[in-house]
Amino acid sequence: MLNNKNTEKTIPKKKQTPNKKIAEKNNRIRRLLYSFIIAFIFWFFIKSEDTYSVTTKIPLVARNLQEQKTYKEEVPESITVTLKGSGRAFIWLQFFDNFYEDYKAVLDLSLIADEYNFELDQYYKNNPEKIVLPSSLDLEFVDYVQLKEFLL
Figure 1: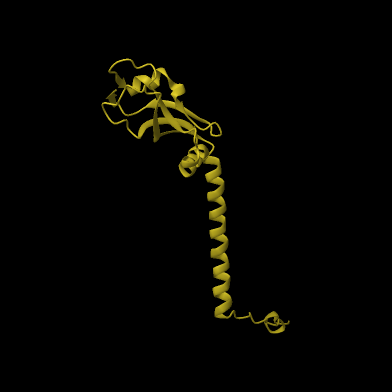
Figure 2: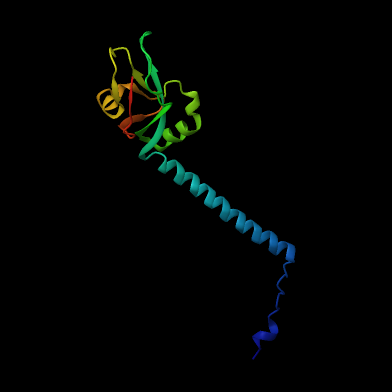
């Protein structure tokens, strides 16, 4: 009988140099990192399609004040409103709000005859078209948040 152990030739395993081990480990880490980045990008695009309600400040523009009238109080520069829209629309609005001329709340003062106490929450509930939002973004006015009023 032959002994199988003696007849088999053992092939020595190649020893990896430390540089190859480090390079292989770095490649595994790099592939894992790329996988997480790609997964995050997919997750971000999917979640940005969801609909959100966001409370944000919007510039306030007072228009059509008659020449003989003056403001008794300073008109605020901005108001706080709740808007509804896709996550992408809010991202665009956050980064490029200064470039949208049609992003404002309009306060029409043309029909004011005497001293008038503006209740902004009621004004914008009755006139939601006075909240002007960029037409390129799919946003919708939901509610006026601050319960501020001022005199004219």
